[in-house]
Image 1: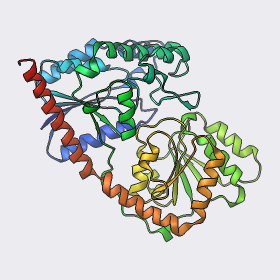
Image 2: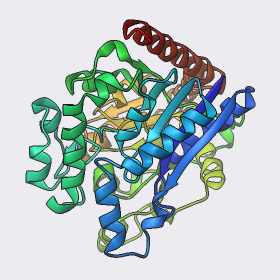
Image 3: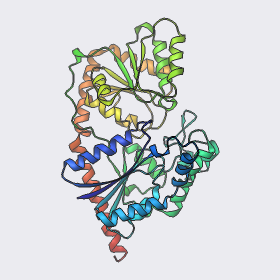
Length: 408
């Protein structure tokens, strides 16, 4: 099968899981013998241009006719069976799906987040879940509240993009199959107006996981691994540990972000030596090695996630997960089986749910075994590959049926 993979890489200064997924699926497809053609752009070209960079991104976000021409030429030249698009923001725009009109090339779009219908992309406003734009099928609330970067000006191009492609029927006419990352996300996308029969669920996979480290050889530590931003709920995690006091296990925060300085000041202001360490960002391989030695991962998000890849990484390492009872997380973390759930943004509930689990190490060890079984059942490369092929075949079939209906 010949596949055209399309992706706008986010800036190198802001590492993204979407970039990782694009590269992993590319390598998987090539490794299975498929002919893969890449068409990519990078937001790094906007760096260092304080006026022209943002302006170029803003103008390209809703509709980029130049990108449409480039994609159309690629389709005519390569004649791919499938065009699989991961991210169009900000330099490509959803207009590129129109480039496949009248061709035999099926179109697939992975929805890594909710950006097509939510300017903030994470269904969150002021630290709380918000679904106004989805429920009203309108972008006006996003502009009113300045949901992207707390700026109405910055939000406007995204709002226009959403409204424009809803009106033009891009999502109903030009995409043969959407890939959602969870059943929860699929339900929300249907609420936003997508046809349920066009949405397929495929979680992320992880290639070549390492063997599980024996429980007795692990450190008695808890990890947070991710961005230190307000939407991730890390403040509630730190406050829970400070309330827990001397009986709390060591907590290591791996990552960086806008809240790091404030959180470090919060910990330092409590006096003494709370068992909280800010490690900062790590290379992927180093972070995975550190995760494999832990006994629990905490994911305290207060935003509605797409699919946090750290969950499949924890499961691959046989590490149970304590997560917010919010969005798709209760679907991904089975309470009492592969981890524990707590109320999002509630430090006290986090503490009262995690502390008993931590105190029962034999039970936590059983959860670790269940986590690895969950990985083997749902998140291996082989499972991901089979599911991807099923989606491609469905998209190709849908494109053929549409061609017959149109008499072409």
